Length: 273
Image 1 (tube, rainbow, N blue to C red):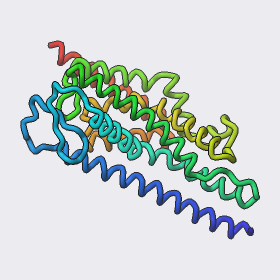
Image 2: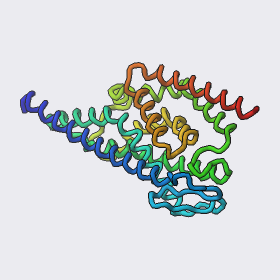
Image 3: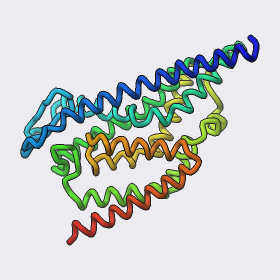
Image 4: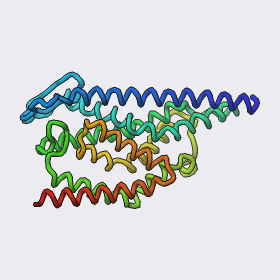
């Protein structure tokens, strides 16, 4: 295959993979918007009740223990929300895989399909979603969550903000962020792409795990602004995107950390008055 023909095929592959990522992200955000609209009861008094994020207006008494179906709906909410928030920042890595994979195939050294890598990445965030669901259940059982899935205690909210802000300055945050910012560096450090589905899946899982390590505490901020607050979700997604895809990402992360600590101190001072 000539170089020009190969480049044409590479561009074609990038368009296919990029379009697939875009469709997945759009569908995820559409689902989140649907759930958010369902959670908005137009001023309805929700005292003594909690809303199940199912998109079909299910409510339960706040004092009633979680049911299996509620746990499943909350888990689905977190999983889809993480796809919508995190897939855009993973796009450069996935697109690079598609390009390099096509070149390897042209040289008779094919890698496993791009979908295996993407599946591994999303599997890491699916695991995080399960932990987030369990955490939400614990917070809800402690009566610290209101009907809109927002922390009802300013004191707890202040502590969360301060902890998140401090984490943004930790070496562990920096290590994970570097792995997310530099796809090629990540590959060099971890032996390059794999030629088997299992190996590729595990490589995607490892990359996704670094991404979780970079952003997991930022997701706790959803309990501050409201888990189903679409504007708050979008702002956090934008922050993650700026951290990972811009040259100043490290300083953006630290600036966000300073802002979180300042907001936490202000909220702590207000709650203690």
